[in-house]
Length: 332
Image (cartoon, rainbow, N blue to C red; front, top):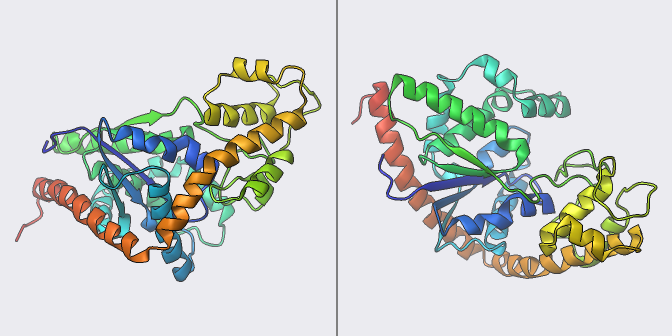
């Protein structure tokens, strides 16, 4: 291997306004990994087009997602921040790995089933094979660790399976990645349906708190959050709504469930919902301020895209040179 440091990779789609689930479960923790790993954080615009996109909106959201990465604390001096389509080796490796991926593996992927049901009029080949592109994203950088939410673990497992199969034919070609799953906030649930993951594509705007929601909106959404007929703030089976709110409050405050139960002993759900809304809004305020500042400097974002793509391409080309030689492609 050509690495002098272990590598961490993750990506976020520019397919909509990011939620506090994206923030707490992933992006907020990304900056921590730069102390231990060489980190690559990608705006995965190629993944976004498995669903029909309005081109102007996709371009706008690509800028916005990069700005959010940086606003959430990712220092470009310590992390490689770039856009997936600016590094064509992602797509090249995906095609090669398609030839080492089994149809049955892809047909069992739960997100394909979910997205097919949601987009029944556009069940395209890209929707079916995008887990291979995700595997290529990871394996292209000889990645050691991938920070993911619990719902994305299946994709890292597929990347491991593909890499092991490839390595069985071409030894030591690809690093086998390991998932890192955050213990806190690994799965933030919908405020309207707390048995379902919070999703940026949810049609019910009150179910989702977005990173860019203003304080009044955040508090209003938490006030309307679905709970239960009990009034006691405690973490217990069957109390999905309160459990979710306690998880969110714990993520923002660092308090344990026991400490939260003690803090709100004798208080009702109304007081607790307001408190959750306030700590959430207060934590998001500096992120929003920095985001607004970054987004106003389009030239600065484009310069970062260029720097990030150049650095990512250096690593990507090294892997692809090795892969092309191993599989028998002629080099010029």
